[in-house]
Image 1 (cartoon, rainbow, N blue to C red):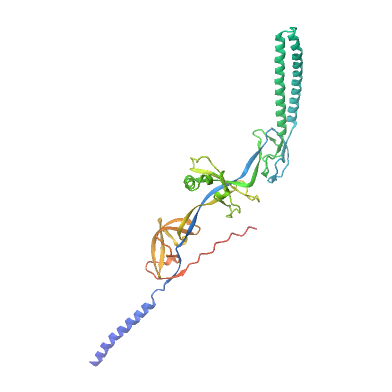
Image 2 (image 1 turned 30 degrees about the horizontal axis):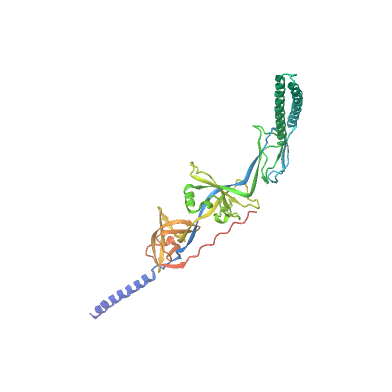
Length: 390
């Protein structure tokens, strides 16, 4: 009997020991806190930047035309280079033009001779008419012939002047200082008459360079209500009153010179719903040329005391935005309403307050109710510009 009693006592004790061992193992197997990286909701004033695509053009883009027809004799400049105002660009054969001018001079000489005869007749008839030696009708005829001769002389002089002007057009000179392009005709081509080339080249003044870009009707209305007329119509007001513009080039670099809006189109384009603006940027090195595309950027507004979190902290599902909020090692998934994106940050319109901490890295492993080991998140460095191509 005592033996059975001993066994009965040992069985409960063994079960108690086994339970304690299992509990100990269960405690040892509990998951460790997940390591996540968090950051506080930042609060600061955020500039709102507008961005529009524009195309560069010269301050003056002038088509060099052949205003008289003829064979192109010579090109006097280096194509694609810089030319000065008054510099000779093209020479057109003058043979026909010289003949036309000589014929006009001969016609003028004949008209002046006829006028001299008419004047002498009037001078001779006038005293004779006073003595009734000739009739008044003869005098009137002489006076009429004199007036007709004067008109013929004036017409001949005009024709000669036109011939001289046409002759001058055979020597085409640069109307401004600027950058000239490639010629559309070669030496020996017949130019100045369709279908032959009429526009021989284009000359552009590229310092300063102009950029033309469209803005939407809503953007225009917002800017028009925010800025006084002197800032909208750039023909009025000083540069200190105007909104400075940046020009981002095709390679991602920013043009070192700031620009300002120079012209505003009169009307909204009904087909596109946009208003065209033209900005002016200094271009002393003449790096920018007509026909380039770039992005115009300008600060158009400022959000006061905006709440910001990194964009990578936000999860989006079917148009809904959510973030994981950490507090004391616990996390909760919270719905938020987001606003504008600013660089790598995102403005929070609703759902978070200043000082709360959101999870930035480690989001994929989070589940409701897990315990986390929160560490400060450090933003990655901004990548530098790529090195120039060799």
